[in-house]
Amino acid sequence: MRKFVACVRAVINYKNDTLITCSLRIREFSSQFVPVQGGGMEIKMKISVSSYSFSGDIKKGVLSLYDCARRAKEYGYDAVEYTDMPGETFKEQAAAAKKVRQSADEAGLPISAYSIGADLFSEDKSDVKKEIERVKSQVEIAAILGAGIMRHDVCYNLGKTGNTRSFGLMLPTISEAAREITEYAKKLSIKTCTENHGYIAQDSYRVESLFNAVAHDNYGLLVDIGNFVCADEDNALAVSKVAPYAIYVHVKDMLVRDYKTGMCCNMTRGGRYFCGTVIGEGDVDIKRCLNILVRAGYDGYVSVEYDRENNSCEAVKQSLINLNKFFDELNIKRK
Image (tube, rainbow, N blue to C red):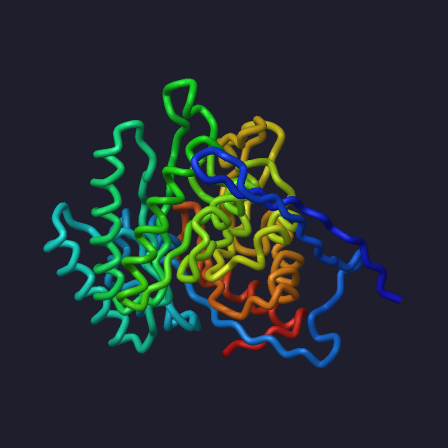
């Protein structure tokens, strides 16, 4: 018999730093690991790969940005995702985007998403406005690429004054900016999302609060399975909290150690050390996280993001092989 426990979470909404609503959400989770094939349910997903995964070999000159789609097709991926286009000006970035799209078309792969960096918080409102306009211009780059989803960051650091040294106090500014961006993107039929990424925005409760604050039907979350390591969260539990808001997923694996090593030299917020690795070869319970996403009804793209620079092409190839095994075990079909 399947056992269930009730999970109760408070959803608190603020406007101008004033509490306006407080409600409870009750969700049921199975206390056992339940394969998704139960009940005759069939889930289909597509597997993409981020161009960021090829970074190491691109830097070495083994391949270029315009080779990523061809390699992805060769390895068996269904699509390719791209990060910030090269170029100092919009004109240069637009030209690169056209060339990237041509390379993807020639490889016969769609572009699943466009991901960019952004910092929508500043104590100077004019700086925020400039960044909003820059990100809007990147929405136009996403349109050139033919990507239906664009991911952007919201902030990287806490403010420098007492009133802004809190994510909660920064929330009104960044959520208002994200809402303006997604309203613009909707006119171009592009959905926008924010990832649990950027040192202070990697916690599940923080990105959930951001989602609730933006409160727009064109906006969602990019759930990066691996990034919760950076905030010392249990990956599966964190995924379960934000899965209902996911419109895109990064599959990332990490090696996590209590001590610094030659490979694991990046520090988590809690003082542990981590580094990226091939999907299925690290300490993140990828299979469990995928199962949680499926049970939440997610059926979009899952995009491999290899977060290390050595042996990029081989890592991308092996990651797909291992991810396909998880799909088979969970009865997830490729679209």
